[in-house]
Length: 220
Image (cartoon, rainbow, N blue to C red):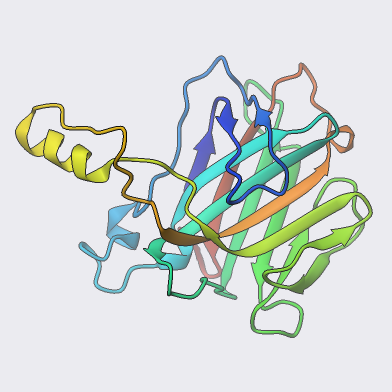
């Protein structure tokens, strides 16, 4: 499964390590994975045993004057009293590319759970500006040099009137409301990385960022 971000997004304070705005390939339209996509694998209304951990929701990216921050959200939305999703058989990859033609990623950041001897520990590898793995407990800021990573439960930062969307699709009459947010008060799991902008080659100044999930034994 793949989640894409193709233009500027505002960083949400609920999930941000730092606040700001990051422009990613602003000349192209935005393409983003949505919750429960693909339905045949992740939607409980279609599959009675959905692969919740593989379901990428959104990819957020922004920058400060010195750092780049990327957040990958997955396994949601869900009620706030439910735990985060830490599946040790899932591999999440953040891809960064400044190749306008083939989209070959020059940087790949991987993170997995349960790889540090703890069932709920997390391990990040390939973070620019670091050497080896950054690993430790979830729900904690893990640091190496100037880089910081974190994985855990977050408020779902996405804003969308799902009820209005369904009513619009059913009736053909536009029924969206700007004050109605289906995702309010719901949670999901996320992996967040922050590292110096100087640690990557931005080439022409435009970079593409996308995330993938893969289950060991087959891609999602």
